[in-house]
Image 1 (tube, rainbow, N blue to C red):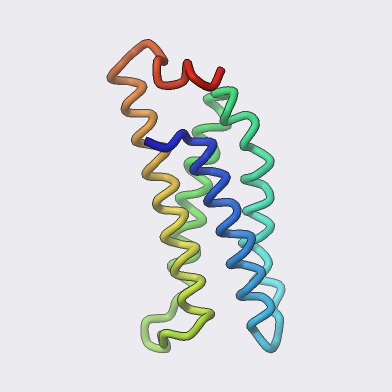
Image 2: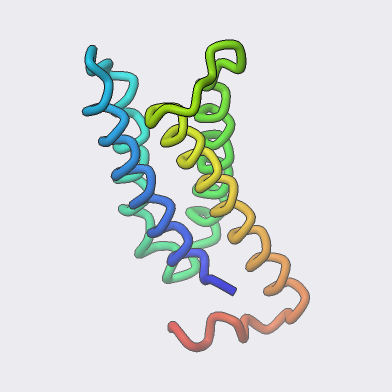
Length: 124
C-alpha cells in the first residue's frame, strides 16, 4: 500500500506535468489550462503535513483532490471527444486524482482497522 504523502506527490507531479503539456499543446493557451498545474503545486506544498499525519490537512486534501477529479472529468465533452493528446491528458489527470483519493481512503480505513497507527511507524 502506498502512503498518502507518496500518492499525493505522484498525483501532484502528474497534474503539473500533464497540465503544462495541455497548456502548451493548445494553440490558444487558455489560462484555465493552468489550473491543474497550480493545484498540483498546492498539493506538493501539503506533502510535508501529510507525512506528519496532520488529520485536518489529510481530510482537506482528500476532499479537494476528489473535487478536482470530478472537475477534470467534467471538462471532457462526450459529444466532441476524440482520442487526441489534450483529451487523453485531461482523462489521465482525472484518473490520477481518483486513484489518489482511493489511496487516501484505503490508508485511512487500514489505520482504523488496526487502531494503533502501526502503518505509520516506519516514517515517523
